[in-house]
Image (tube, rainbow, N blue to C red; front, side, top):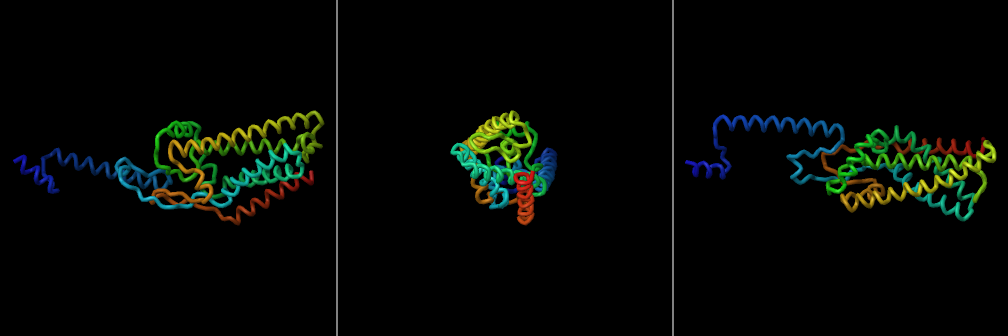
Length: 276
């Protein structure tokens, strides 16, 4: 009799085994219902939607737009402007140093409101999580896993905040610093000579802080690529990333709004540099 049942089971015909079989079916139905609710909630929140039951299956990945053009242009413009600032300071190219500093300040004044009204992946609320979440994500980087982050990781979000703060420190102190390798800042006349000289030293320290933060950022990107095989650089160039097909496309803000914010920021910087 057992051999006959085994042959039926192999053929794919269910074999009735009493009350225990009914209990197992009910348990399986409850698990399926729970997984369905979890998948639905994950889809609405835009987080990872891979369940234990489906993680072993092949997930179809599609190319999705995750970074808007203004955010990507700001990212690479900051790199070029920091290099221009350092080189011009060491060579004594005053005009270039001032222009690079004004441009950095303009981009920072643009990035602040863009972090609230910009594209979904550029908003501070989307990627600024608790420091504990960032630490957990970082310590898990030894495991190779699929890269299913829509935007910045938890650790990457805090890195962005630290870099923006360092750039703001360098730009603001540059406005008030006294004469040194280059001419005095446009607002140096608002402070006495001793204070302006002290601010100049702080400005020099700020440049080293910026370089240190940027170097740490580059090392982190390389570590992600080596340890987790996460290509963080390519999406910041192309704006696109391959994600599971059931992911929700992030909302992109209007580029016209970005241009308006940049123009407003440039006007503010012009007033500060020439009219105060």
